[in-house]
Image (cartoon, rainbow, N blue to C red; front, top):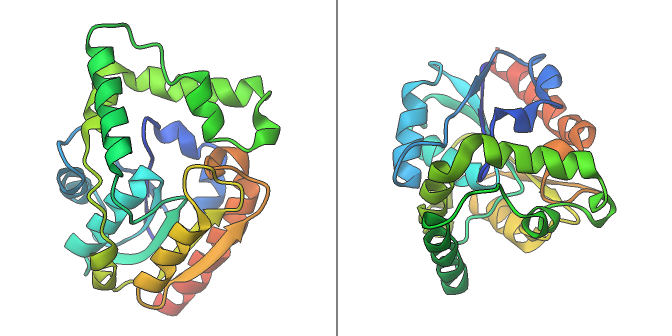
Length: 233
C-alpha cells in the first residue's frame, strides 16, 4: 500500500521524520507539495499528478483540507484516508482578517519564521519550554520562507462540511485531546460527516501530533492501515 503524506501550514516533509519509519512498514512514501497553488483544489490536483496509481492518504491540519479534496477528485485511486488534527469548517471572518493582516505586514518586512507565540499555540503546555521542539517547528517555516507563507496564508479554507458525504474510502480521524487549534467537536463533525469514518483520540498531545506524540500517532494509524491493507489483498 503506497502512502501519500500531506503536511500542514508552513510544514515541510520533516514534519513526518519521527513517524516515517513506522509508516514505511505499510508501504512506500510520497510527499505532497503544498508550496505551490492558489487554492486547496489547485494544490490537490497538483498532488494527484505526482501520486502513485493507488494510495492511502494521510493529511495533517491544513493538509487535511487538501487530502479530502484529493479523496473526492481521485476517489477511484484513494484506498484510505487518515485525517490528523484537522477540520471541515471554513475560516471565520476573524481568521480571514487576521491572515490578511499578517500577509500585508510581511510584504514590507523580513520573515523570521513563525513566532514563538504562534508555535506555542500549537503545542501541549508541557512542551512550552521544549526549546528543541519549538525551534524545529520554527525551522520548518524558515525553510519554506516568506513567499510560501504569503501563498499559504492566502489560501481560502471554504469548509466542506456539506461535501463530506462524497468521500467514499475508509477514513480514520485522529484528534489530539489537548489541541488548542482544532477541537474535538470538529473531529466529531468529520467522523459523522464521512460515511463509516472512525475517530480516535491521542492523549497528552497538542496540535502538532507528528512531532509531539509520534509513537502514539503511529500506534493508532499503523494498525488501522495494516488491517485495511490485509482486507485489500
